[in-house]
Image (cartoon, rainbow, N blue to C red; front, top):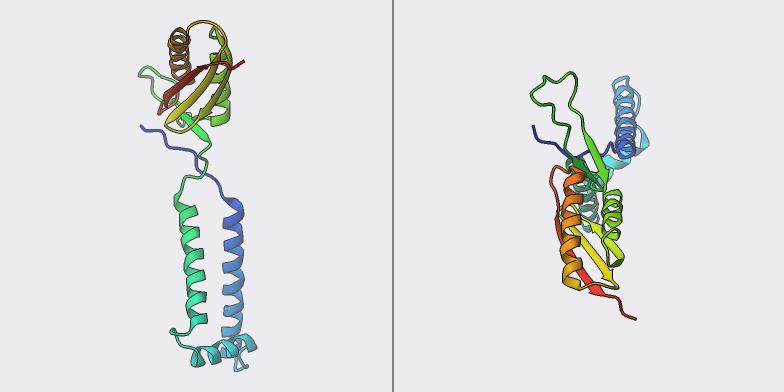
Length: 187
């Protein structure tokens, strides 16, 4: 079973769209019921019918309004299909060694900043590293370290080993590739 990324709930945009659709549908339903009861249509509906008689799809205003509505629809579709929470990296679930699952599968994640902090703390434990900056992406970890003693090749080799072990211990579903840069401290 593959682990899927966490999805954003997006409660506020969904609630706003639902309220907007509910209000428009309710207003239209009320007006249609009023017309069926032999009452005149609401003023906005008469005005809309008049404007639709006068303006054609070739008018600039109609094209701009259609473009704005199409753009709003595209944004809503994009929000609906994207996973959303990209700042959380998926972690592997525990190995159950062939045991039948007692409940729903366990899902775990760690924030990118938190994972970067863990790897930074690991990098600072390497002898010769004076400072380190770690940037965590979905597919790559960028580590910039400054050394103040020891040979740079030795520090880089130790840092490479420590970061590789740290990435493995994070237990990520898709472990990122490390990219190390070690330089001498400028005095």
